[in-house]
Amino acid sequence: MTGAPWLPLAAMVLAQIGYPLADGPARAGLTVLTVLLGYAASVLHAAVTRGARTAAALVLTTTGGGLAVEALGAHTGFPFGHYAYGDAIGPKLAGVPLIVPLAWTWMAWPAWLAAPRTAARPLIAAVGLTAWDLFLDPQMVAERYWTWDNPHPALPGVPGVPLTNYAGWLVVAIAMMLILRATIRDRPGRDRPMYALYLWTYASSTLAHAAFLGLPASAVWGAAGMGVVAIPLAVRLWRSRS
Image (tube, rainbow, N blue to C red; front, side, top):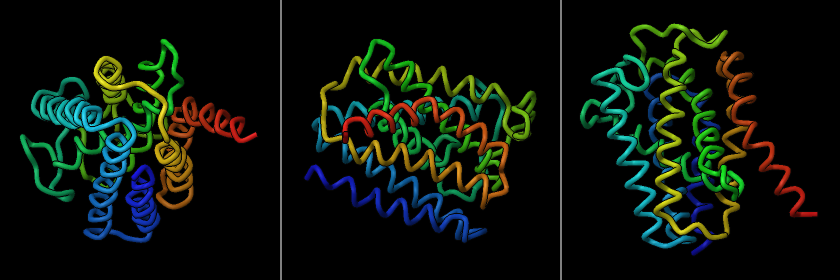
C-alpha cells in the first residue's frame, strides 16, 4: 500500500505534460484533472504512511480551511485582495471552484514533508507552499481562470497578481502549518512520492513557464522562491544516497 501514491502521481505528471499542448476547454479540463490527481496522491500518501487520523487532519485543515479562506477572499477581498473566479474550472461552492481548496491540500502536504524537521519547520513549509503560488497565480491569471480587480503593486514582470495575494498566502500557509504540527503524527515515513511531487512541481513549472507558457518572469520568481525549499531538499536526498 505504501507505493499506492505513485499511481496518481504518475497520472498527474502525464496530465501536466499535456497542459502546454492543449488550449481552451481541453486545457481547463487538464487543470481540473491535475488538481484531482495531485490531491489524491497527497491524501492517499498521508493515509498510508501516517494513518487515517493524519489524513483527516490534513483534509480538515487544508481543504476545509482552504475553502473557508478562499470564500472569505472572494467575497471580501481579505486576505488576498479583491478577485473573482471565472467559470472554466468547474462547479463552485460559496463562490469558489471546488478544485481550489483541493489545490491547497495537494501542495501543503509535500511542502510540509519537504521542510526539515526543526523548530522552524512550520515557517519553512509555509514558505514552500507560498512559493508555489509564484508559479500558480500567474499561470491561472494568464488563462483568466481568476482575475484581480486591482493587481497593483505587483512583482516586476508579473502584472496580473498583486503583492497582497502572496502576503495573504504566506499568512494562511503559516496558520495551516502550525495547525498541522499540532494535530498530525510527525514521524518519519516513506515520503519519496511527496518529495518527488515537490521537486517535479519545482522543475516542471520552471521549464513550462520559461519555455512553453510565455511567462518568463514568473519562471524566475517561482524558481527563486520555491528553490528555497526544493534545492535543500534535493541536496539532502542526494547526500542520503551517497
